[in-house]
Length: 72
Image 1 (tube, rainbow, N blue to C red):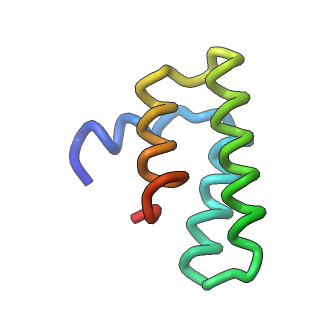
Image 2: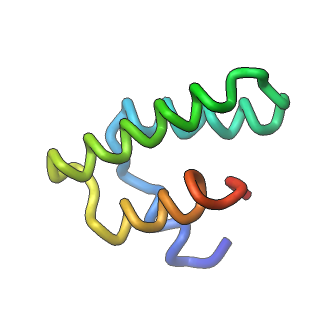
């Protein structure tokens, strides 16, 4: 993880942090509900961006890493 990644995952709204942590735990534990966890995170990212709680760069980063990527 480089410096940019550490910055982009900081100061997120609590609900987004919660959903991000839930997805990370779900991936780690091979949850059967990963599709739901991805959907929750995607909705939280969208809400945070629309509400101006995260930047476009944070939004794009979170999508690339967690929604389109493998979350690692």
